[in-house]
Length: 433
Image 1 (spheres, rainbow, N blue to C red):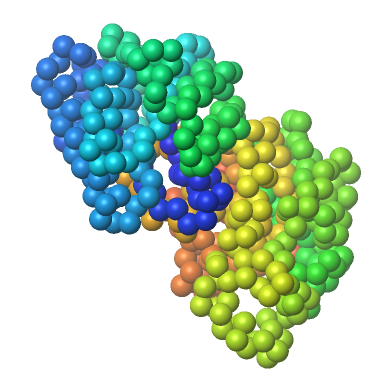
Image 2 (image 1 turned 180 degrees about the vertical axis):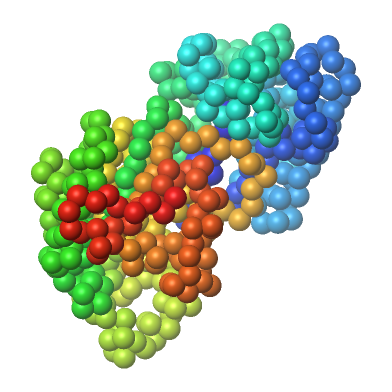
């Protein structure tokens, strides 16, 4: 079971600043064996390959130890098959020697359709199969699975492994078996795994149309849409009608600018208070220039650390991230959803779905599976702001970010901006990707 960084971020979301890293054994194997030829490498009677695989595991565990003991790491994910008791004993001995805690995650699947879909979704793009066609990848990986089956020993909650902490995920979430959860972090892993699904779905993140306070450069408040904001809402409706998205749910905050944007769509929508914009406290409905003039110390403190800075009587970005956790979990378990929200909220949601995190500073894994697409829609100026925030903070607003966006195609289906020129007629929004 792969551990995408959004799982790690879910730990970060609920637990403040947690420093963690993924150690993917496939990366170590590919460094040790430059070219992967076939499933023969994973045969249990291939003694030379077995030695290499064990040595890779030992090296990876030593890196885990260095990370936890010397680099300030708090959580390490040892991402490997670990399908035999012998391999798990190696891990348990390592954990006992270093006085760490261990939690196993086992994915059991006997549904041929799910297995085939997983191979096509993940393995076709794996570094193990450069320039290989889908059929040959499928054939080879199915044979690799057969190699694992020969020696596979599942976790045994009734006898041999009854004292271990673990979760078994059966047929991608049809059933779960949870054994001896010891602490908060382990409970967070269980919570996440029980709330996701792997069916393909799309998440549409839309910032509300321009509001009266946007025109005045004021932050916060609960103002109505401007004339441009209303035009944006009409263009959004045309876009969604052209997309013909099945069973689309629409979520908004409880602030008027998101509700008015949704009302133009002519479909039912659900209001979420936790999707409200970040609370600016005593600075609500002020411009940044006015804040600098009235509260110069607060302005300076915010400028030094925007993530942890909390407006007096209001919230910080850290508070907002924790507030959004229930929405994130619901988005993981839902089908197609359009979220009409606010700039700070969208930043936090994008940070999660684009696998960006202030708390994740290391990664040794390069294999991520995405079961959903993310599409962002907003005014052109807002899009420039978001791109600068996530992709190139040093770039000016006039510079193009298209080339930088290419790196996000794996997790973000496309980004769109609705510009003033497209408000008339039935023209579609402009594709950035």
